[in-house]
Image (tube, rainbow, N blue to C red; front, side, top):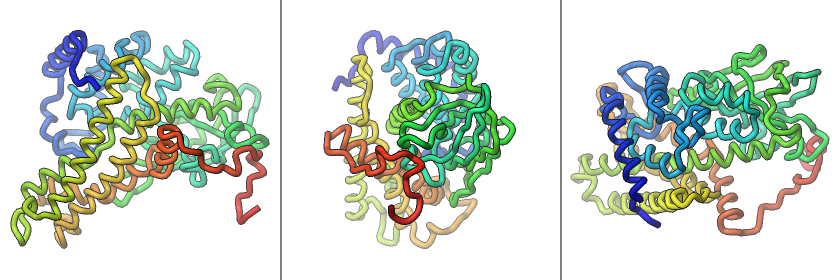
Length: 415
């Protein structure tokens, strides 16, 4: 690993710092510092609107979606320049949360499979934040096993008629467009009968129902499709090859999520240094220090794993499935840290007090929302399989339904 910038990278970093210093919304700095772990709530105004304003300013300055070609709203930068931008943007990167799925996952799929007219129409407003995209994959009976989905599309002239349901769709309630994977042929094995489309989320027959979470937030949604008509020109890839298109999305998802999952370690470290317990400062307790040491070690491992990815990008290489390591480790750490923080707070940890300091109250929110980080973008079990099979080269899981036509797979009991 090489931790030093090349002369060209150092020059680029200097340019980035100058632009951010002159243009960043510094009036939001203190609130963004307190808005930890991706859960942003600003008193200064509507988060979505403020995020769009920052994204639009970046787009006008030529700093949106750096790695995209200029004709699609990007800058034509190298992958390592994108990493440098993310490092220097710092806390203001939190305002990019509404665009993560569209720019990190949907955009690369459009760039790979859409024709030039579609790219020119949809990519620039996606890059500038004028339009937001979501990803319609998971279903009630097809979460970790996305290929087991049952939402169907039937051809009708030059259109497709879609019926079914998706669930856990992040940001569907404020998205303009979405990537949708559906079953177009139930007579072939499940991975071979899928096709990918994109659609307007305001299309007739689309119903979005936000899911109320235990934390009080509604980040996920159920999405129902009733005779939704999608033109065939909005298909991405060939009919029946939707799984290959989906893999492009999922690879980008692993990279986008794996390199940016919060762990909660900075928050718990600062908290333990300031917390007074009945026995004195929490940091003086051996058990507390042992926990912190364990999490510090894991955080260091994640840091250097990320550096390996950065070094690979600097050499022009493409990161592989090892990005699943980041999500697996960070997701479990987040939940462990949240639970430990509430244990330290004792009975006070279950109270909701508007006058309670943000640093203490945030752990209540964290413990309620942290389980989602171990599910969204692939469960822990999926991540372990990816790491085992594609990183460590271990034998693959036995998949008894791999070559069975989808409509012959038993749905109840045993065959």
